[in-house]
Length: 293
Length: 212
Image 1 (cartoon, each protein chain N blue to C red):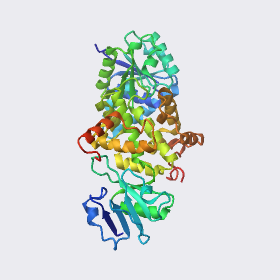
Image 2 (tube, one colour):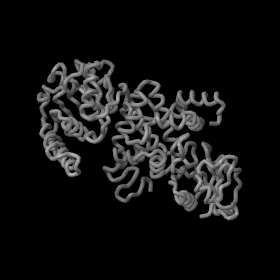
Image 3 (tube, chains in turn yellow, orange):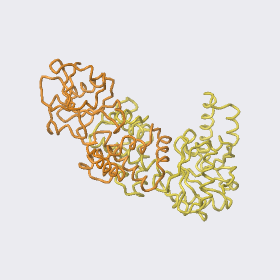
Image 4 (cartoon, rainbow over the protein chains, first blue to last red):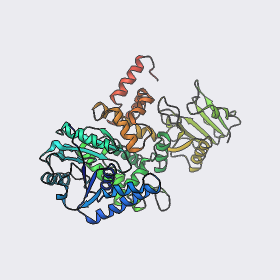
């Protein structure tokens, strides 16, 4: 039996992903509690949410009235106790097993016995995260894509002891929210990162091996496969330091050599060449020159 | 720039009708394109281009190479129509002027040229073959349904098609041959053909199409 969900909480709503998930929930008509330890983070998210919605109004995708309605359904709190009445809690906190387990353990004491916990982890095991809870059958993976408020996809992953009702309820919520759920096993990286992280590493290794320049690699992938972005351009956007973290999580869980961070990636991070955020990664965003040029 | 196409028994893989129609005689051409015909060096030509399959350019010209001879391959996903991508293959001997000339030549034909070192798999196969093998293995292991794996890549990454639908559409037997070529030089689980590709190839051989 699926659970009727009326109120949703998002933990880590002061971050980019959390903010996007909160917008998805509020846009679909759910009362949405935005929880974060940082009041400043929540304030910043609120401003970004307002700006996003205003932009949607300006582009004629949303009425002013609907925009105000969405914002009115989003409340902010730094107190975990305020999540007591929630039907669904989605965590988008720091990608650490200890942090996520600790949060879920705390939520056990606050929330109802029927509350569903969704984890937005991209690489960690849902089963392991759920082991932090006294009710692991109520924990399910709900992996959104960045930016969550614009991307329809949600990877829905039951852990080994997730109940059928929890999975069905989470699935129904995704669909009711206008999202597109896909079911995956509880395996490192699920579908998206299991394919993307090693692929991006292979592109870095091709640069390192002198196969081609970053510019030619991206050109080949975009022209040959029709991708909107080349892997190296994408890595620069995501951040090379983030790729290192993804590799560490992914390699530790799989021991797949393709998931290990390539030596060039480590060197670039050490040199502060992190991508767009530092103005230079595989491409130079100050002069449009590419890495190595 | 005037070009001649030296064909073998079958039509060149890279050329459409318009490109074939634009060719001139060998004597009149500045650029000679070997598309199946046995290669002969000619220092008088500004540029000689050898169409490659899975092999390296050095199989035709040796590891030292020849200053005016480059390789190339127009990328296609197995049975799919050819893409507009041409991988231009260079060796250490080639200067920037020669590479730029080759790139400009293909761009002048309305194609896009990416320059690759003379390595097996060049750019595209080196990157996509391990990815498709991985996707096929994950499918076998029950990570998700084919539909969901493809949908995830389309919705989550903006790909025009999913990895499984693409490799199946192109022909798993073709994927097997590309994978096998990579595996021979870079043996690892990621380059070893996935089970479904092995099965497809063996079935093709069984139907009498060993060369695909």
